[in-house]
Length: 136
Image (cartoon, rainbow, N blue to C red):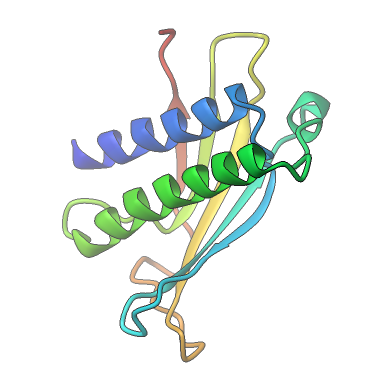
């Protein structure tokens, strides 16, 4: 049940950012000031050329939107990571949407401690997840 909430929230965060022209495709390394909190690598990919059209225009507003997107990702994933008995965010998540105007994404998530050690708690082979967002 909680895993489904993480899946839905992840899809919502990516969809909202895409709708606001945030460049979601690419590697987002999310770091925390507390050395006891792991860094998160979020690699978002898409085969759809439209997903790659979003670029950071250098404006302050665009920078704030990108920061809000990355903060939302970090908050969601750290919460899921902290509650690992309920959900394991590590692995590859496939986000698909029913609209032909919204690209599908593959989101790979990994955690690393600031000392470089892995903090993965899942099986050696990454779990694959398939998420379908509902029409709003």
